[in-house]
Image (cartoon, rainbow, N blue to C red; front, side):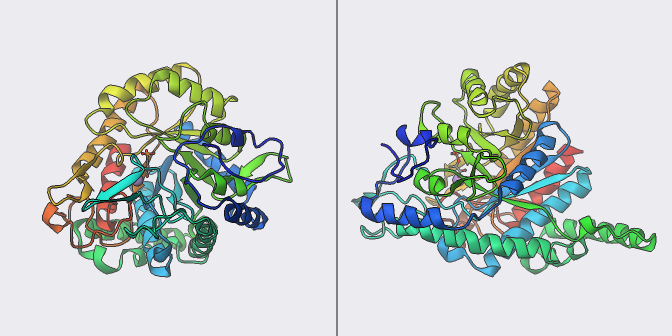
Length: 447
Ligand code: PEP
Ligand code: MN
């Protein structure tokens, strides 16, 4: 299938290649109109911001910083509210403080946020009670409701994705630069339900130590500007190429192409075929890139991806986000890391401990066990420590709400609890207290 964008740009070379996981839009004229409109909209991010994130990720690739990347599996239009966005941000800020303080390492903060609306699926249809319908592909494409009408792809949703991303990013920018992310607010991020969980109490003790340090610095006459705001970036999977192409613009400073729908974009495990459109697209934009690498990744795949996406071997340009599964990471990761390192490439190695550890619980819920998530991160650290390479970061699916989607954690969620607040539109996310648990445990590994 080819993507369907009306553009006169000569260098949109990916448009003539096959692309996996694309929606089958029913009405090409309606799509054409939507894309023309999208192409006229202002950028959501600036090229210069993408360059800055690439520089920050360069520090990750060189072993001088740690990446915290997290957010929903699938954002949903009806969750674009101040409460949801603030809770997610709070979770990431708390995790970042734990990692920064407990491990004394700079943390690069990137949300799976403000654009994470499109989902690759392993099957194109879904059957319930004998009824088969097209699968849900994310709010950018069709509806979650299991009805024939809702599952028809509607290009108007691409515009809603843009507007939802825009208002989310606006609020994120306000929160992170407008005083809310000030380090003196460390206690304020720990209000509500999480405060009484074991990790919330542990966090409270750490926040007190930070308070003391700040008070000491203040008494010495030091009050750095850096403590008042937080540098925070957006990212999503570049999946629906109609949308990403309409948001791809030429940077007036350099003449280079940037996908201005988010700071960092990644290519998923199901769309990283070397001769297909997604990799060609990624090779043409200057944004920092991620590529997911699952257990079937060969050394040749990894080396060819580097040649295509990072021919100049520029630290920060390319992050490999490995998702092997807790049972496989210790066997499969060493060879990849060793051979990539031997090739002279300096990629950032990021651990996604979620996507290799999904299973169906006896209750029928798609879930993950906190212990498996933790074990994959441990395996990832062990492999890098053994090879002398840098475990550069974690990529996690989480929410700021008190959901019951993953089992385990210090404030334990049991299989029998899963039905209580199972709210994800796609994969199960760590709740706020499980996310904090993970941050404390990762901080220990980083020290
Ligand atoms: C995801 O990140 O939600 C996802 C689908 O991951 P992967 O491409 O690694 O399966
Ligand atoms: Mn997912």
